[in-house]
Image 1: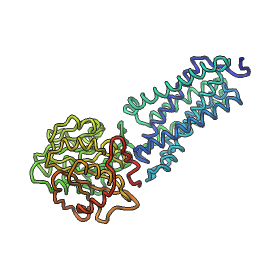
Image 2 (image 1 turned 45 degrees about the vertical axis):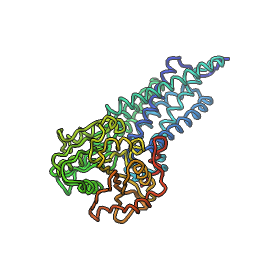
Image 3 (image 1 turned 90 degrees about the vertical axis):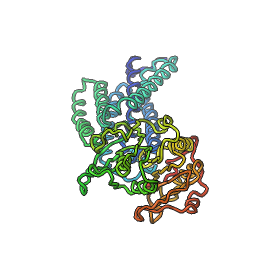
Image 4 (image 1 turned 30 degrees about the horizontal axis):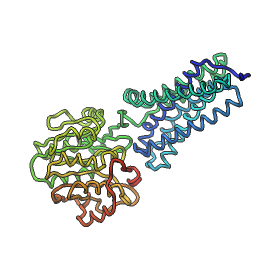
Length: 484
């Protein structure tokens, strides 16, 4: 039974339109994590909030688009809807710039920011599919074929958007430029579909939305550089002319004094130094899990001549930044292995290192797969029998994550300890805690009292309490760590 009174659309046109709009939704979903990272960091909770918000937008858009298609001619709705989707895409970076730093990364804040920036474009673009379906349903006998083919086209577009963005676009272009191009394509396609004969309407739309697109492209973002993993800024220290801070996704990650590699600005790095200073004199072979500005490997080389370091760093572009802006030059005593530490550590020889320094972070959280018993087993394998592990942990309040991490290391090492701030753990915010582990009795660490104190063995046991070790099949690191 044919439908009457509505426009029609060719099969190829319908498939292309559904493919394209689904493609754009998934591109925006992936870019949402990059655009919001300087505000709320990078964590499992960040991606959970963004994915959930975009899925909600898709569901609402499908329902609203279907209802509108039943009440109005979808042929007249599609063009303006695509154009509106482009406008809303352009608005996302403008809104992010307007919001600015929020200083929070709790689930409510994450979802709120995702909703005000990416819910609307996801919903509007998702309304296209049911509108196109209504145009293609000329005969009830072909309903299954039409709906199935459009669903397949939408899924294929989503897959293409996911793979192309994750593997190619974010490594090749700045986030805001990608969003600008996506919005521009949608605006142009929407204008064409609206109909060139509506000259006045199209000109009016151009006048109204053109400045938004230019703002999306021209407004300065927070990044000096975007790598595949982070928004990067280099911030000079006004009080120390040779000082530079490396800021990743809005968080101050490293500090380097270009003229003095022995200078350590971060409290937690001074605590690292207190641990390594307590080891026997002479050169050290060190493994550094996390490189960023390469501050600490250079420090050890300066204070212990003849030392050698292997650095495991996921983001190879950060090493280029360290060379260009932070005074790091290729050298024989510091070897950098680019790749995920969980994979690269497997290629290192047994009993190779005197000290292993753990300082790998995604936002304020250690990547969960670098916290588990399975990874600690690898750490134990490459550490010499009399070696020491020193870890930077960030936690506060109940410190459930720090307790679980110490419990995990205690399953492999006979002795574990914790250096805490002199005033103890803060209830209202996380602080840097330094974990120490060894098969031998822990060295007599003597930190500056202003930086912290080493808990006694009894205090450490009481701190760990009944915390369970982390395993590959259960490591809820983001949920255990105290929020800001």
